[in-house]
Length: 121
Image (cartoon, rainbow, N blue to C red; front, side, top):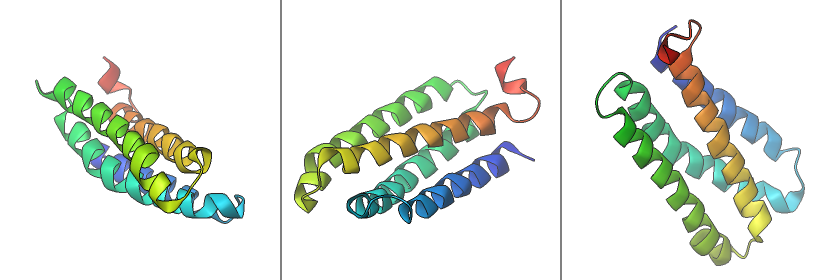
């Protein structure tokens, strides 16, 4: 399986798990979890794909740094703009988003390392 295939599969698994979790969490966490899933997927999806495509190139660390900055900006926008505009408390808005972003980072690592661990050598 290619890195790209592993990445796309991982994105789908994490997003699907988040949507299943939406049915299991407290009612006041459901809408924030859905919005967090959408935002994380929209931001992380292309950035992670760019990172996976840049492995082994001179731009890898620049792409990684831009992805990290984008995640931090997304958390800030959620905390300072989206959550207050929708009247959400900080925890239901930020905890799911932070967890999803960490999960998507795990997907990146899984896509880059793959079965052989070649990306670590």
